Structures are given as structure tokens and as C-alpha cells.
Amino acid sequence: MSMYGRDPWGGPLEINAADSATDDDRSRNLQDLDRAALSRPLDETQQSWLLGPSEQKKKKKYVDLGCIIVSRKIFVWTVGTLVVSAVLAGLITLIVKTVPRHHHGKAPPDNYTLALHKALMFFNAQRSGKLPKHNNVSWRGNSCLRDGKSDPGTTMKDLVGGYYDAGDAIKFNFPASFAMTMLSWSVIEYSAKYEAAGELNHVKEIIKWGTDYLLKTFNNSADTIDKIAAQVGVGDTSGGSTTPNDHYCWMRPEDIDYPRPVYECHSCSDLAAEMAAALAAASIVFKDNKAYSQKLVHGARTVFQFARDQRGRYSAGGSDPALFYNSSSYWDEFVWGGAWLYYATGNSSYLQLATHPKLAKHAGAFWGGPDYGVLSWDNKLAGAQVLLSRLRLFLSPGYPYEEILRTFHNQTSIVMCLFLPVFTSFNRTKGGLIQLNHGRPQPLQYVVNAAFLAALYSDYLDAADTPGWYCGPNFYSTDVLREFAKTQMDYILGKNPRKMSYVVGFGNHYPKHVHHRGASIPKNKIRYNCKGGWKWRDSKKPNPNTLVGAMVAGPDKHDGFHDVRTNYNYTEPTLAGNAGLVAALVALSGDKSTGIDKNTIFSAVPPMFPTPPPPPAPWKP
Image 1 (cartoon, rainbow, N blue to C red):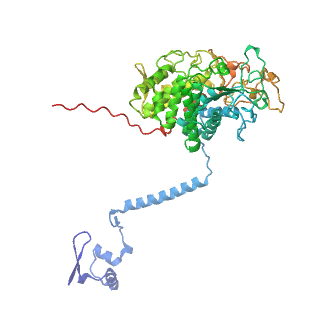
Image 2: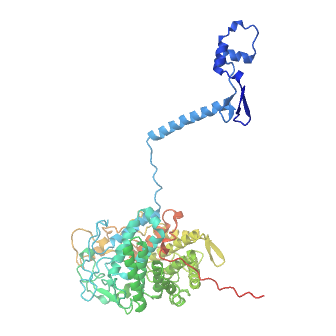
Image 3: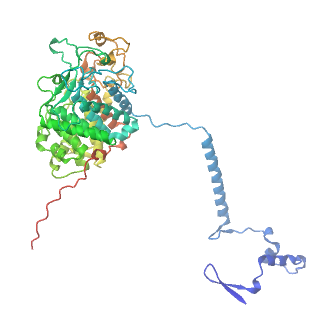
């Protein structure tokens, strides 16, 4: 009888009953035989049956692993190698875990990051009002807590807070607003770099200190207003006036006891539009704080409407602001404020205004002039053109904005060309500092703004996958722009003929006689009166307090610098100057691959649907 099965490899399998004894039975039967009785010699196979596996002379050459058969030699080597590797890996792991490790920290921060930490501290030193506990400037205290109240002629009674402009204690809202706009712009573009430097919360707190104060200078809850507080304190000493004020007296802000008049304006388009820009830009910085952001947007809309309705320059008619921060026109602020309000609200009426050809023409977008392309507290056109080129590069809104946006984009390209050494619109000192104000005093505030625009525009082009831009027939790489920004900032940080850093507290050699009242008078519990502080002003000794991070006015056109307290053309720092410094430093700091934040500025901008082209002409046979 036979049974049929299925061979697992595919063929029929036949098992004979006669052969069905198990291997164990067979081997037992063989053991029962008397080996000595076997008379004939056995072949090799038969010997192997008798002697069993324990007495094998030869090992098998192959190992059957079930699914494959491999050479025994290869098998032994493979298993051996795996075992040795596992032992070695275990030993190495044990050594690594038990031997004490030396932590290699991150690479040291670059000079721009180091200077950034200091440059932001200047704003802490300039704070007016009741200071926060963590202000970190040991020689400063609460000051001017009666601003507004002490002037019976003003309706705005709470003007405590804000920032002192420079070495004096005047609060000039025009350059202060520009400083806040610049800081906000730098945060919107480079928040990741601020975060990496550990300064994001600090810079946002600095901006909020400024915008909280700006909201006090007009009725921010109303939809329409008829006046703004433009300035607190006066500095006019012309005609030999001896009336105590912020320029005649030399005393610490904490000790001020003379009256601080408030200057109000009823037609001040330039100031109001700049304030609108500051509040609108800050609303994007604080977009995660919805209530505050909306408050800023509402304030921005209100002051911008006031700027448009009540036309006039805030510094007209020989007023006190005209002596120190005289505004040349308000058209550039209309373009600048309109652009920021469009980004903050997404309302296309602001974009229509900012791209109106007549506005651009009045602002000087179509003609050169000696100061063309120079961004400053007075002229925002170059900044506005870069800001609107951004819109064209990344969103390309098309008709009806394209024509003027293309013009602004082309003008921006021309301005960037003017910054390059091969063009001669601006002279350079022998040490390499670009003379954007044509050799006049206080050059550095213009240089830092240009460095910021150049680094930022270079990052715009990189983000738009554009390798460079044309100056006439010649093509320049974005690296050339970045190099311009770096050489100018390196000059300011000490790479100049005098080997002097123009940022106080940075490097080993920096100005020690900064024109600054608080820094020049010791905090010794002695209260010096108006004239009593003159001895500190005129002293040849270095300031007893270090005004960390202050960028002074700068060297002359021959790279010369006089570290003399009374010579403010060399040694006085300003809010607007330091805001440009901070913006340029953060743009160049850290890793270039971080680049700009492409989208945050467009958070409120609705999706763009370009106007469709006209339909094709009807088909005719």
C-alpha cells in the first residue's frame, strides 16, 4: 500500500510502507549488530551509518539555512564578524558613556550680533517716565513724571513715557516715530534672527514703550482728531536766551525741575503720517496680541486720516521743531504711511494712494537730486520704494498697481547701484565711509539706514530666487550689496583709520565723552541745578556712566573724530540713528541662510487676483 503526498517544492511525494521505519529505529537496529562479525569491508557510506555523526572524519562543506544553502566557511565568518562587531559596539558605547565629555559650545557670536545686544541697550537708557524694574541701566531712574500736567496750555495731560531723543531730555515725536517704524520693520523681516540672538522679547518691549507713548499724544479712541502733541520740552537758546530749558540747563533727567512745554500741532501731515506708519508697522509685530494690535491699527487709521485732511508741515513757521527736526515735505510720508497701512489692514484704498502717480511725483520719485536714495528721519522715499518693491517681488498684484510698482522697483535698483563704489554719486572717505550727506556732520545715521536697505534688498532678491540686478548693462550679484553693507558697518564697529568703534561699549576703543546729560553726571545723590551741571558738561574727564550701545554722530569727511562732550556734531547719539543701527546689525547678524520672513508682513493682505486680460476678438471665418 502506498500513500501520496505533495512535495513542498512542487512534485509528487511517495512514501513506501516498507521504508516507514523511523531513523531512530534504524539506528537502534544497526547498534544491535556485532560489528566484529561483519566479514566484508564497508564502503564510506556504510561506515558513516555504523560510526554515527560523532565520529565523522569530514565536516560538511555547506550549511542548510532552510531557504538557502551557504558555504560553511562564509557562514562561520559572517557570524563571527557580527559577534565581534556587536562586542566592539558595546565597548565603544560603554567608553563614550563613562568617559567625561568636553562640551563644544556653539561658535562664538559674530560682531554684528555682539553689537546688536549693546545697540538695543541704548533705548533702555533713553526711557522717560516710570522705568520698568528690569531696565538694566543702573544710573537711570524715574523722570519727568509730570509731562503734560505741568503745561496748563495743553489738553493732553498724560504725556508721561516715551523716549528722550538724544543727549537732552526733549521728546521729539517725529524722529521717535521713525525710530519705532524702523525697529518694527526689522522685527517683521528678521524675527528669527532676533530670536536666535535672544533679543526678540527685548526689542518688542522697546517698540511697545514707544507706541504706548505715541497713543497718548492724540485721542486714539476717536475716529477723527484735530490735533497731536508733537513735542515735549524745548531747546531753543537762540538770541542768548537764559530761560531754563532742555538745552540751556545741563542736568540729569531725574532732577529736572523747570517747566516742560508741550508743542501741539493742528496741521502736521508729515508727523501724523509717520506716526501712522509706526503704529501700523507695530500692529504687525504684535499681531498675536489681538487687542493691542487692533488698538494700534485704529490709531494708525485715525492719524493718517488727520494727515490727509489737515495738510501742512509740522515744523512750519520757525517753531521749535524746525530748529532741530525740520521736515522738508510730507509727500514721502504719505507714500510710506500708505504702504504700511496697506500691509497692516489689507485695505486696497491705502495701496491705491501709495501707488498714485501724482503722490510719487510730489515725493520726488522721478527726479534725482543730491539726496536721492538717502533714507532718513526726514525723507522716507527710499524706504517706501523698497517696501513696495517687496509687494511686486512676492505678490505681483498686477493692474492697476503694476506701472507705479515697476517704477518704484526700478528706482530701488538705481538706488542700490548708487551705493556701489563703482558709481560716484556719493564720495567716500579715504577709510571707505560713504558720504550720503555730502561731508556734512553726523554722517553715521544715514550710513546705517543705507546698510539696512542694501542688506534687506539683497535678502529680498535671494528669497525671490533672483541672483542679482542690473546697473545699466552690468549685472551685479546680491553678494555685492551685502558686501557694501558689511564694509560700512565694519567701519562703524572699528575697521577705520582711527581704529575706533563708534558704538559705545563695543570693542576696546570707543568715545568716552559722549554728549549726553545723564551719562556725564555721576549718580552721587547730589542734585545739580540748571547751571550746576555745566561743570560736568565742560569737564575733560570721561563720562562717569557708560551709555552702552549709543552710536555717536560720527567722524568727519577726513575720517577725523574729536571725542569732546560739547561737540555734538561728533559725539551725540540719537534715537533715529540707533534704530537704523539696530536694523542694519540684525540684517547682517547670524546665519545668512536664515534670510527674511517672507509672509508675516502680508498676514492682513487678502489673496491677489490680478485683473484678467481682455477677451479675445470674435472669430471670423
